Each structure stands twice: as structure tokens, then as C-alpha cells.
Length: 264
Image (cartoon, rainbow, N blue to C red; front, side):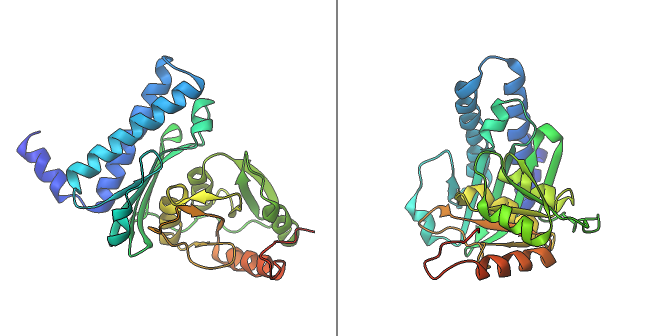
């Protein structure tokens, strides 16, 4: 690497680094899928590993003091003692990637003291990149009938109940990042999930959504907290602010003391 290129890399902000790594991994994933050398589960496993290697190598080179929590790597408990932790999902939506769809992404996030401090969500097959340091609130006005997004493969009972309560429509989509960024872009109004996710699934999307002024919490309204020992995050809602608060209030009103949501 030339001295000029090295100086550029060293001067990069965390956001710039995250964006460059996410784009690099995305380009590689597109090229890998287009070669036709593998398919099905074999392609998914190859893609997960290749994207993970790219992100880990870049972070190790340019942020060597920061630990990383990745879906595709063994967890390192030492991360729990650190303020800064990178949380990455090298390929969010492996199923969609393998099926040749466009609703999959690359997530790179930095949690600081448990907060989603910055995030980048790349949607390579759509040619889109969302950065928490450059995102804007949705430009389109709210719909008369809000549009709720939920998982293609894990239907959410809370989403159906909220749709009835809000007079909203429902659509499904792959990849947590693709759904969250559709809300950020104003292409949908809410993303509701209760089927269980992990920190790497939603840290980057939450960081981008919060930077855009959107609502991003657990379904009970508590904050999304990262770099915890348990990587599971059971549920979340990402929404326009006025709708997010309505969803939280509705869910709370239908949740019993046992924590069970009454969808009826």
C-alpha cells in the first residue's frame, strides 16, 4: 500500500471505515453469487465466511484495539470489559442472497457503552448504502394506511395485531437490515419483529434508524442495549416516531403479567 493510501486509511473516521468495509464485502458477495461456482447452502456458507473474513481483516488492520462480535465468529468474552465493540453481520439475509433476491445486506456497527453509536447497512444488490452519519429522516409523508414490514420466514403475531389496531397494511421482506432501511427510506412506516434476533441482526440498522430520528426500541419500549453477555434480542420495533409510541403503548396494553402478548 502506498504512503498516500495508508494515510487515507489512518485518517478515516469510524463511519468511513465501516462504510468502506461494508461496500467491499458487498462487492465481493455480488461477484461470488454471479460466478455460479456454488449454490444453495454451499453458496451461503461460502459467502458468510468470505464476507466475515473481509470485515474482520479490515477491522483488525485499522482498529486493532477494538474487539468484534460477529455472527460468523466465536464469541470472545473479553469484549464485555471494553467500551467500544464492533458488531457485524457479514451477510444478513443469507436465504435471500442464495435465492437471488435483493433484500439482503451487510451490517457494520460500533457499540459504545452498550449504545448503537454508529452503523452502516449496505444493500449491495440494490446499490444502496445507509450510514448513520449521513442519513436523513424519511422524505415522504406518513401514509393514510401505514405499511408494516415483518419477516418472510418468521411471521409476527404482534405485527398482525398492530396492523388491525393502526388500520395498517402488512408486507413481508427478507433481512432485518433491508426492512429497517425501507422504513428509513420512507418506503414503509414500521418494522416489527418478535421472533428473536441477535445483536448483529439489528445493531447497525438501529444505529441508522436512530440517527434518522426514528423510533427504535424493544417492543416494550425499553432501549436496545448491545455488548451484553447474551447475544439474543427477543424483539424490536423500528418506526416513524408517532407510530412507534403507539405500537409500544398497544403492545403494553395487551401484554399480561406473565409477559405473554394476547393477540386476540
